[in-house]
Image 1 (tube, one colour):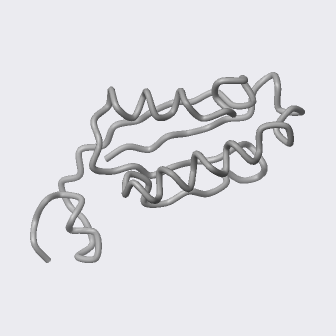
Image 2 (cartoon, one colour):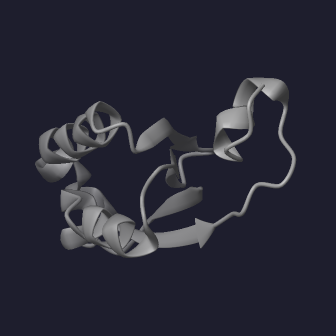
Length: 98
């Protein structure tokens, strides 16, 4: 499981120029079943993605394809988490049965 932090960078003012592509990137990640959650980092600092069922290398490639990342609207940090204990509703993250 991964957390991707997308922090606004030097080109933040260009976000409107790449918003449509960024939204398409998000929808593709959701459709592919890789993104479980996407949301804003408050207050207005950028965004975060919870990703699952992918490899670090594949996720790096996916993140690099985000127009916000490619055009330095945001900088991306990928944090890998090895879940050991979850609420039963999230048991799929550890590979255990609920």
